[in-house]
Length: 456
Length: 120
Image (cartoon, rainbow over all chains, first blue to last red):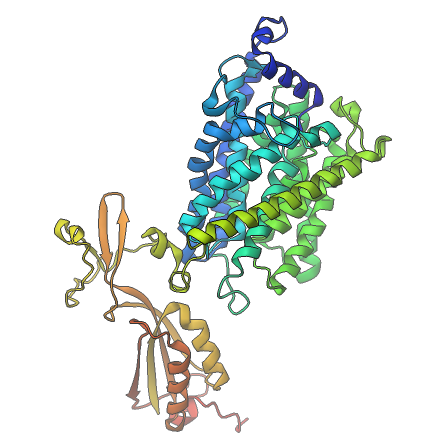
């Protein structure tokens, strides 16, 4: 949740747009607008960044499929957010879900929402809806039917993301309880991780899981993705202040400090366990630290950000070691990174929040022990709702279409079988399909003819 | 001695290696190759360009073995590389004129699978 003050302002303006425009203090700040324009672009960049992070972690034959699972969310979740999702999340509605008052962006114009244009607020929130859907894909890579995935994230954005965003940020029941979630520890990360759990339980493990080593095919991609995610996260957390102010500066600096601490602790754990600091581990650590500071970013002092970063390394590190020994094929450890990272961050927010820094709420350390319980409740509520509904969405989809790729496609690779492309095509043996052959849909092979030796 | 040359599916390599190691075949060479074995072409599209890929990625194994080891090696590959679909590959058994082990200078049967560890 952004600061309570901003939220109440927002609600006031949403309810009374006409009066709000007349009111003296409801003016658009050019500074705030500038920062939010940049933040929105930064958060949008996180989805391609995630594509590289996930794409590098899978095998070469599934690289494009994995990256497309993120990229396609830019289309599906982006359009559905404007059409329906924003209204379900931020329409006034009830404590549980918004309403249809802003469908097709009705009434969402250039009037002030806080101190920025309402339309810009919608776009900023839209980038969150996009990346949250894309985050789920990491758990179900290398085996999901792409068509089913499209249906899944479309339905998921409306049935799971929008209501949960409403609970916490849209004036729903968790907001009323005073749950603190600065930039989406519960709404984005615990939510995506819970959906990942539901999806893995429904889909089951990859066919080679537990029989073969399935190694990252491009570790530099993983590092590139982690770096770009960190960069984009400055908009994710800094922008969640919804203004270019002190709260944004606090969130921004905490976003720099926490992952740095996670990186150090992760490297030390690597060192003591195997005497080697791994690159995939470092990239994972950065993401875990970013996830953990997300709910806390604008609420805790910088020293607490360092502690949150350091502490959050522990549960995720050991979960990632333990998980591959089970039959639970959360392929890219979405639950360990985002679920445990997000939960650690949300609970630690309830401990370290300090009103002298955030002007809103205190945590356990500053005389408000109940905050920890509220934080715990918000994590549990999101975890249960998102995992159950995600499982059910896949269950219903499976009655109409295949949600898992065929065994043959899984063996040959989803890039060729589902997308008709290869990530690393050398072009050898590629024969141009002529117009009449395409028209016949013919794939009848002529006798293999002599190919000229490929020149390179 | 014989040289066993097997062309297999890339996704079957792990299964084949496991079967070979269980059969106590430890010495082998693996190459990535491309070939055409009569399987249908995959059609791929890149923007406006549609192509059929006539060559498929395969793995080639070269294994030098003693005569009495040929049958069990071949059986291990047949068993582990099989899917039943076109494109499973081939196994060739070739005569070998001479074999040297570079490290020791040993020749012929002493230089191929099974590895004799009797001499120190």
